[in-house]
Each structure stands twice: as C-alpha cells, then as structure tokens.
Image (cartoon, rainbow, N blue to C red):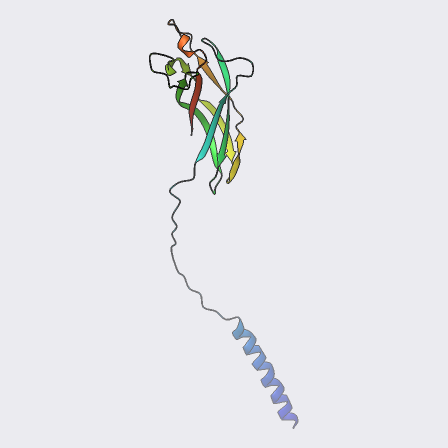
Length: 160
C-alpha cells in the first residue's frame, strides 16, 4: 500500500505540473490587416452676425465706426474662426428702398479683414462675441454723398 500511495502522489504531482505547463503554452504567428473610415464632407457652418457700433456717432464721410461680430455653431463639432471679411454691403434709404448705384454707393464703404482665432464650440446657439472688432470706413469722396444721409447700412461678412 505504501508503494501505491507514493505512486499516486508522484502521478498527481506530474499531472499538476503538466497541466500548469499546458495552460501557458501558445503558438506565435504574424498577421496583417486594414481598416477604413470616411471623413465627413463638411465640418459645419459658423453663422456670423455683424453690428455697426453707432453709440458715439453715426457713420459719416471720412469717418469710421467699430463693427462687432458674434458667431453661432449649430453643428456637432467645434469650429474655428480665423478671419472675418466684408463680402458685400448694401445701403437702404430711410424709406426702406434699396439704393441704386447712382445714390448711396456701397463702394464708398470698406472694412479691412479682421484676424481672429477663436473656437466656437459645437451646439453654440447663443451668439458668442468674437474677440476682435472690425472698422467700417466711409470714404470721403469728391462727389456729393448726400444720398447716404440717413441710409441704413447692411454688412454681409464671411469667415475663414
């Protein structure tokens, strides 16, 4: 009986050792693969608003007024405004009729590009003030600019 107990103990020990070794055995190999994704075709749109500051005075020939900008971003990703430029300007008479080229000339007004650098977070529906103002300049022409007296000025601006 003693021999069989020793034999049983050796057999159990060998079995445990083989099981432990087998549990950590593995094969090595190599492989390769690929993946793909499609980037969005648009990163969204920032909506800009411009307001001419007339708190100290209305704009006049030879003068300039600050222009404040705000932006909203209804998209799903943050967007950046790096510059703001004047794309078009229109002037309307106090009666609300759009002026003709022979009356208040839009070409008498200008605004230099404004350099900005602001992040507009995704889903921003409350207008966010840009940090840099522009300056709307009304040229002092050698011709009469009386047709611009009391005109409403509308700015159209674009961002890069």
